[in-house]
Amino acid sequence: MKSVPSFAVLLCGAAVNASASTLQHQCAHTQQQILSDRAPVCQHEPVQPYEYRIWSHDPYCLSRKGKEYCTHTTLNFHRGHGLSLISTPTAANAIAAPLSFTESRGRASVEPFEVRAIAGKGFGAIATQFIPKTTTILLDSPRIIASAQFPSYLSHGQGAELFNHALRQLPDVDRKLVLSLDKSLGGSDIEDVMKTNAFACQLHDGGQDDSYMCLFPSVARINHACRPNAHARFIPTSLVMEIKALQDIKPGEEIGISYGRVDLPHAERQKLYKEGWNFGCTCDMCTDSKYAIAGSDQRRARFAQVRKKLENLTPETYNAQQIVSWEQEVMELSSKEGLDVLLAADYERLAYVYASHGMVKEAKMWAGKAMESLLEWKVVDGGPRNEVRRIEELLLELGG
Image (cartoon, rainbow, N blue to C red):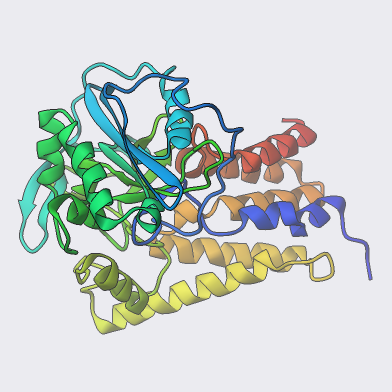
């Protein structure tokens, strides 16, 4: 058996396999992550509560089962909006630490969309001007962040008290905005708003290892689309949710993001959205002909099958020609199904293949595409950067 080039060994190793999974996010919807797996969040050493004082109110705290949770509120968090956080004191201090050094006040720029009533959907975001691909459409700050674990410790009544304080202490404009959001899953007004509209976020919380529900009111007005024209990603350092255009968007077009993994087949998507948000998806992709839906499902199944083969490569099964052929197929399928946002690992894999055969120009090209994809769609300030560092090292070794 012929020897495998060193680049190929790295290609088949754990480093690339780690990035070859589907696109990860620091933040996703409460019921289902926007794209796929939970992203790792680096934990920091716990610090003493309230070392950083950004809060406008004294914390309102309740305890049970040996655990204390508090409502913390600031009236001027981002662009003049307030924020209420329900968490342990240690988590609140850790979350506040980077925010105390972030000057994000000021007035919001004019957004390239407006919220309008849409038949059968309630409300939605409609583009009011041409939005080029990769444009940041929206930077939305959370109005309420709540620990996902506190209901396991506090009684329902205690939880309601914390939520009521969180809502009541917000500025009037933010409180009204929160209560205007859709409600579809039951409970009190604020509980229903959170269950229907919040996103599940991973935060740097001082080693508490909790997960959080984050309510972004403007993002909540953006409807789901199975083949979205926009992409959501969470920025942990500022707690802001960014919406970017996946493609050129024309004036009058509705802006849509995917509430679940973008590569799911039709039946799984419908089940997810019915159980998670109590709606049946009526996007163009889901209301197409049975023939078209079946064709899409077949392409998505093949996309997943080929990518699994690529992710399970070993030095013994390495075959450069086969890898290139599979990756070409993956990219063709991705183009048809709108899955290009998932391809950073595939670009990186091709860079290693070409590098292992001394094809430096081609290796640099694919490494560059991998870097561009990561920076545009995945990597954010405060999030993991191991993939970026790995590609930087590859480019350095390639001399560029």
